[in-house]
Amino acid sequence: MTTNNLVLAGTITRSRQFDSPAGIAHTVVMLEHKSQRYEAGMLRNVYCQIQVVLSGERFNGVAKNLTAGVEIQVEGFINLQQSRNGQNRLVLHAENVELKT
Image (tube, rainbow, N blue to C red; front, side):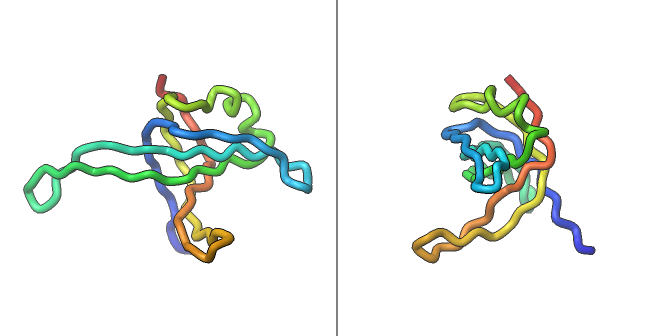
């Protein structure tokens, strides 16, 4: 098995909830991350947006709190998702979510 684990903190910019045809609850949020990190001895600004998917009943308790403006930390794995128009993007599938605000 190879390692696939990502921990990222940021602010939710969008959120939606739905049930799959199989009846599985899903919450999908767009997470915006801003920070500063040192690279090659120089400070750089870091910015990214990534879609986060929370699936299953274990997230039902926290899902109602995941609205725009809320700060969270997410731990999970990344996966490639292809949109209807054929564009690829990385998506973070949550295994643990912690509210920061």
